[in-house]
Image (tube, rainbow, N blue to C red; front, side):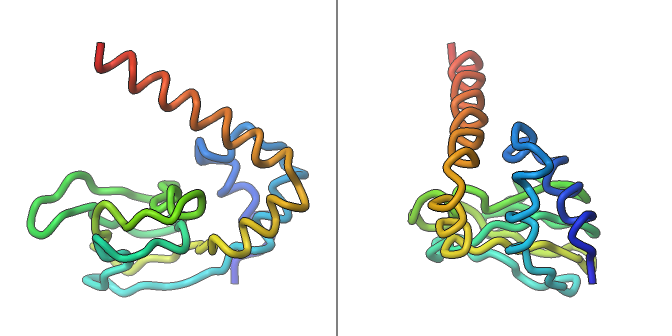
Length: 140
């Protein structure tokens, strides 16, 4: 069982939440559920309706579409984060390469939290705006 303070530190290490104070991250850590996946187990299936995001605490995963692998992710990475913000289908599959320990945050729990703490929404919007600006610079 991962202690709450360790969950907060893990959340603070990812860019989606790095602009949010440690105090504000505590409720997010409170809704983050620990889950384990075995090597070879599919965590996210491309095309499925997304309803949660994951933070990889331990292990390695691959992001892929069929046999085409886009990237491998390790400890401290997050994936599926867009699913807690919109209802679009998953854009890729994620499969565990090793046994993995993850934190799972559901869209439903996250949305309830955002209603209670709008400052979290503002911080996330700031990060997403920065990502979009950086992506636009690379396209030019």
